[in-house]
Length: 91
Image 1 (cartoon, rainbow, N blue to C red):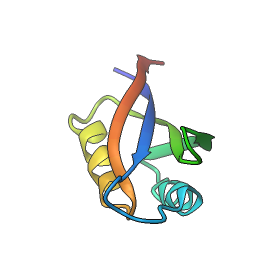
Image 2: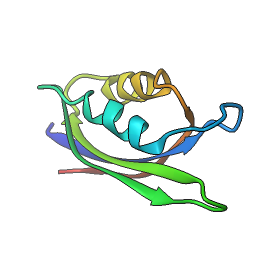
Image 3: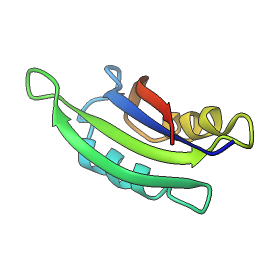
Image 4: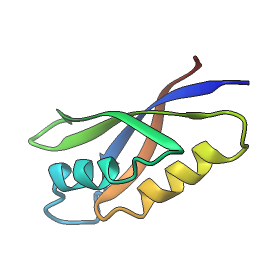
């Protein structure tokens, strides 16, 4: 067992007006802890002036459910809509 690296795409919630991608990025950075090593958070263009947040995080694969827990924490951030896993791999 070791570490797993995951890359997520956080899309803006279409039901929320004036979603601030930078605020979402800051909230995701605040999730960093001794369990979740948030290595990169980038705001990228989506379409028509919308932006999405791409997150790269490393966590242990020894404890089951850590990725689900991290995803749940991200869904609680204001303005986050759909969360998509772009990549996942063992380190």
